[in-house]
Image (cartoon, rainbow over all chains, first blue to last red; front, side, top):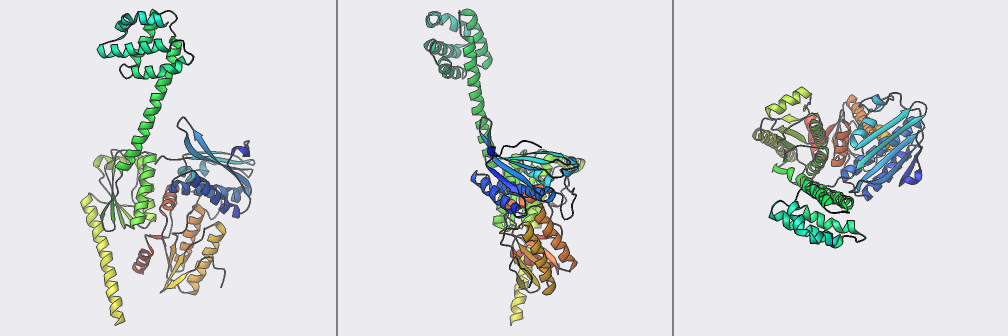
Length: 144
Length: 245
Length: 119
């Protein structure tokens, strides 16, 4: 779907089995803590990664999550960028998938993607049926 | 260049300045300018005189002044001065931005006091407009206080909120749901007629909270429920003792 | 006894389950089975889930917890959750997650109060 250079990222996580969901959660949690995000934002970022990892495991079986710290603008505003990529089946109707309450599988609230969109400051998704899905999100560090 | 300016200093200042205060400012500037003229880091050296000058005259007056000097003096380095001028403006802008950020931090601290009104009852008067940043900080602060004090009721008073649109309504609903997840109840007060009007028109639904007309009835309600619970607890306790006898 | 993932305490007709482990997908499903079995075997009328040690509750974990509460309800048993961390509550609320069929309490005492009142 897109070319990613793993060397540009601070953390690269391979999601292949169910355990990887918990592992990715822990890794990203300590990463966000290290960069002084507020406790609430650490939880939001960790929860987001948990959702992204589960989506990969559940729908695509296999994929990668890339995480990095970014500094943008003249005032060097810190943010964490997360990229989740897979070569899974893709999402047929992306617009529907990011609306709360929609799910194609049993035993799900269908709040994964819509929830992430609300938790993060920016949210982008690109998906092609048969090719895979890329979700890019970002959370800025707040000054207070 | 230096001589050209110094020799005509009085004449130039007369043309440039409006009023005595400006005269002194322009004079200082021209002297400084003549001093640094031709130096290698001329542009950098000019920044301080320019920002001094800008304390007395407006950007427009400075711009006009540069034009005037360009017309009066041969080989006047107007381009370099403009470059320095733009950089100075950028610095001033950045300083202002920082000041705004600082003030916003202070505002966030000041604008959301959380008051323990009664045993088990917290009061949060919301004052001013809510944006995403402020709403998130406020929610974090409120949730922490609620968990720490184990308050049974959180009274949220919105008398000081000018508008509740769907976005602000959304922030409030999120915050109320979060408080309820902690096992506390939210009582909303201070909804003015015009806000009630827009809420209904926009379809913002606060059905998960208890709404009371004013702070007085909110507090009466909260205290009576708390008292009822404590009363029942005492009753259970006594009954327990009686059973033991 | 089938696999137990959390220790539980039986108090009167109530079951208190302090969850002191990180909830991942496999664990939360085992927890569901464990609770339902214990409700059945010990004649439980109310379950208290204490999640004060749980740092992350995402949409799937909330789903399984609500699902468990729904199943318990079908067996005549209420479910109360207490000790949700403030930042977890914020995250859940912002995602729009609702804990269906679960009562929320501010503390263990409050949870017991709620169960007493429900009977």
